[in-house]
Amino acid sequence: MKLTQATLFLFIAQAVNGFAPPASTSSTVLKPEIRNKPNQRLETTELFDLDKLEQYTPDDAQTRYFLDKYGEKSRQYRRNVYGASDWVYSRRSDRIVSNLLNIGNSGLVRQLSFELSFLLFSSSFIVFWNDLFVKGWLDFSGNPHAPLTDIIPGFILPLQPFSLSISALALLLTFRTNTSYARWNEARTAWGKIINDSRSIARMGCTWGKSYKNITGDMVQRLGEAVLSFSRSVMNRTLPPQEDEENFIQYTHSKLSDPDYADRLRNAKHRPTTALAEITNVLVDMELNPLHQVEVEKTVTGLCDALGACERIFTSPVPTFYPRHTARFLALWLLALPTGLYEAFGNSWNHIGVVPVTLVVSGFLLGIEELSTQMEEPFSILPMEKMCEGSIRTSVMEQVERSKEGIQAEFKGYDMMSFAAATGAYSDSTQVEYGDSTEAFEPEAEAAHSPTQDELNAAWARNSKGN
Image 1 (tube, helix red, strand yellow):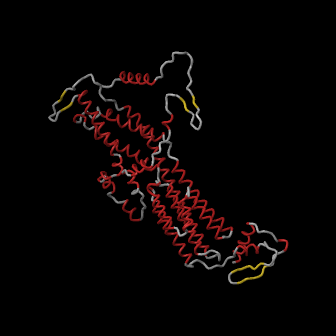
Image 2 (tube, helix red, strand yellow):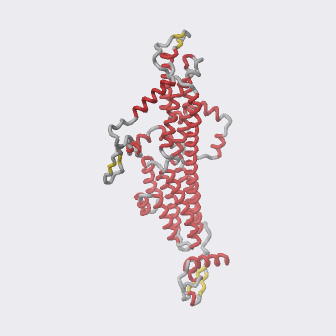
Image 3 (tube, helix red, strand yellow):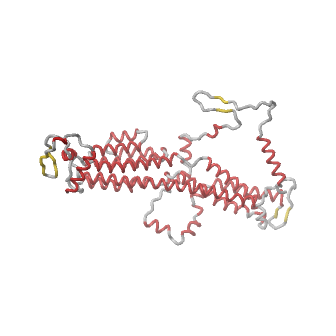
């Protein structure tokens, strides 16, 4: 027989009575006992254990165990960088049929193999139970057989509850997918800013490198390595240490020519900000004109902004109760789906059509949930290593080498002492150096004071216009 409304109401009433607190024998309302222990959270003796709501973080051994699973190992092969040929191949005319024929090799299907296997078992059990104890069955010859008993309730529900609830489930899945993709897009945008700003710092530093007599090739080399170490440090911060720590230590030994800076970077608690500090230190050592200094520091600040965006995404997931509720809703909905499809497939042999349809629908819906889970933490599927070594290192070190080889423009600017003299910073005569010529400069006596940044900038602008 079917689960009648009276039976369902009886189950609900029993469940409610089971969770109801026992009646008090006294008319006094008892409040929960509150214990406030030193160095501990506020605890209560309520029915719900709030300690279970604490975040669970696996230890190193458990993390390595999960990293050895197929789902985590496959993420390293999803860090794609497309070129022209890849885009042409992605637009091929047989892409839909080809992807359909290769569904057995899909990483998504492999990742969902446990869930789909469980649903295969549960849907087969529901069909077997209803055929054997409720509706009867047909043998291979087509002969009908009566159910074994008529007192055991069957797992049969109408389709209306599923039709009403599918809209809410679709809303949860859509919001989760859109949020996860937005996180991935923001992470890729932040890395795009890291690439652009790294190139800009190298371009400005290397182009100005031959315009200042005090800037040597070693300074330009230090600047390039500091810029490259920043992006590499961001990559190290957003990947599991079990995957990248050893590679990062090797990087500091092989790619950084300054052993002191390499040691500071390895031992730093926050490596990206250590790299940012090194970039600023190199720029200070270059003694750039204030206009140049301000301009390049704006770009360095842009790197810090991109770092903040990456850390915000990496350390702040979607509120955990949202994906948990979505997963529970989806799991219960899919587990109950065969009960609603049982009558709809009454024309199939022993209602066997319920099983494959349940698996197909489950694969689609679980796939959407799995996609959103994979994209929620975007850094382990972003091609950060290729961006560090290809997009950033190639362009930055090419500019460094050009600057060191003297391909940039020859020196024809002013040093900082010349700017100070040009603004009347000194009362005594000062030699102003410009190119290969020198001339005496006699400042006015009333102008003897320390130059301000505005005065230095104005002097730079006047001399630039004159040239």
